[in-house]
Figure 1: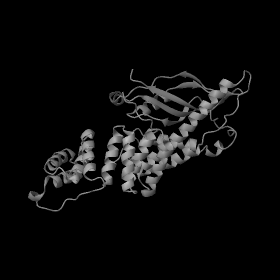
Figure 2: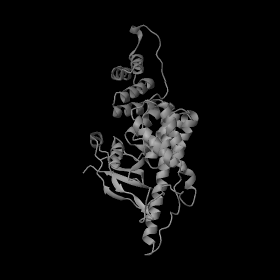
Figure 3: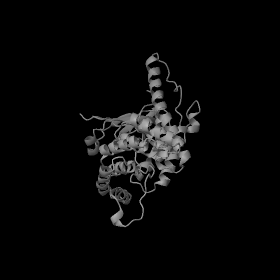
Figure 4: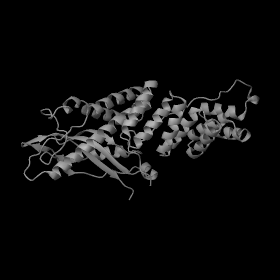
Length: 362
């Protein structure tokens, strides 16, 4: 069964395929419009199934018409037939190897099928042919993020934004990449603390962590996500993204204190020690969504949270997410956790920690 990619917020890529326009229709009487032109016009009107039929007839009559094959691929994709869309784009590339949009479209099909290496390869070819192809930069970045190459993904997002500053998908990719970079630091910090606990002699006092995570990454992520939401004010998951933005702003506000050797007074400590650890009283498993089960998605959602001194979880941030609604299910399960606060010197203490929810299809 396929494992979902480890995106932190965005579970899968999404955007409208445009990829250039290699052909145009001309104003002719209906009797003089051929199948290719009719298919292209149907595609532009959103009649994708009808466009597929017309363009299939066109490529039967003109098998070397790269424009017809290209629009057939676009129409097949929008009609939900990814497999045949890939074949159409492969044919387009073989007929016209210098046409950047066909490589972009092919890369996107590969990304949808979790062929990250293929997506990167074709996206890079598109950029080589057209350095201002911001869509291909985005696709290459998404593929690299799914391969846990967060720094490279961030570079692609920023390159795309230099070309198109209001490109929503690049803003989201930038957000995800920054969170992923932070998550890598966070994971190293936790492992370092665990090693110190194992090597510490009995009776040794608990020390502060060797290195604090760079919260400025989350501050930058909050700015990128805010810009994305301004461009998409009515999108379907507004509540989820707004909550993520609130969490990012909170953790991002710790950027200045994270440079200090010690946590600020009355501020949550950055990690838990045996002497300052909340006691979980109740926790339930996150439930699979039917869509995730049907798609064979499995993996682990990692959440960063604040265990407050009031016994309430706050600022739930997805450091690593899963598609098909599983990140939301993990957050819903996290909200049901009941615990007694961490204690220090006999007083309740707020601490930042992490939660993991693993989804297995057995």
